[in-house]
Image (tube, rainbow over all chains, first blue to last red; front, side, top):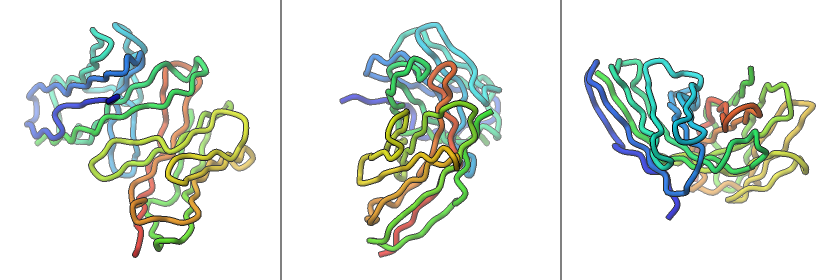
Length: 117
Length: 114
C-alpha cells in the first residue's frame, strides 16, 4: 500500500532534549516536505527536499533541521525543542514539483503530535 | 507573496443540506489550487485540484469547486452533505516557482447536524 509513515504519532518531551521525528514513503517520490499545523494558521511549511541531498527552507524553518540521505526517508530534527514548537506535524511527499507542470498531489502522513513542556 | 483566506472558521449544516466553503487567494500568476480534507486523527486527503482548463472541477466524495479568477476565489461545494463529511477542510494554492510548496488557508471546520 502506498503510504507516508511518520513516527511517533505522539511525543511529549521537555525543553532542550533533542528529538527526531521520522518520515518514510514507499512511492519513490522525489519531493518530500514537513509542515506544522496550528489552530487558525493552517499548515505552514518547515522544510522541503527536491531529491536526495537537496533540502531547502520553507516558511518557518527556525529551530528545525532535516536531512535527506536516502530517497525514502526525510527525518525532522529538533536539536533543542522549545514550548513554541508544540504542534501537530505532517510529512508529505509527491512525485515531482509543481513547477515542472506535473499535477501530482501531496500525499500526507497521519501526523505527529508533539508537546514540549 | 501568496496567501489563502478561508473566512469561515466553523460551519454547521444539517445533513442533506447543501454546502459551500469559501476560499480566497492572493497570487500574482495563474494559481494551482487545491482542496484537502482532514478527518480527526488523520492526515490530509486531496479532494480536488485546479491547474488549468475547465473552471469547474469535480473531486472525490461528491465535491466540486469553481475557480473564479475575477473574484480570486475557489469555493468548494457539495449539493447534499452526509454526516461523514464532518471534518476540517483546507484550501491551498501552489507556488509555481520551486518545489511543490503549498500555502494553506487556516481551515474551516465543518460540523453536520443530524
